[in-house]
Amino acid sequence: MNRRVWGTWTVRRLAYLIIGLWIAIQSAMGQEWLLAALGGYFSVLAIFKLGCAGNQCTTLNTIKK
Image 1: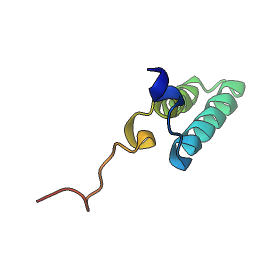
Image 2 (image 1 turned 180 degrees about the vertical axis):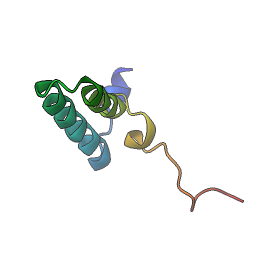
Image 3 (image 1 turned 180 degrees about the horizontal axis):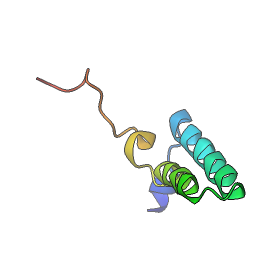
């Protein structure tokens, strides 16, 4: 788990974290709790290297037919 959190940080992963934290903080200050949860979701994706933040998503070009 430690390696997953502190391991290789890419530009995409850092962008997910910064944007997610920005959305969460701005939404919490405006008391928009649903949007704050959305910002938290993107932050968690970045921190734990999940989904596209962790380069684990596929595009239509890489899917074999």
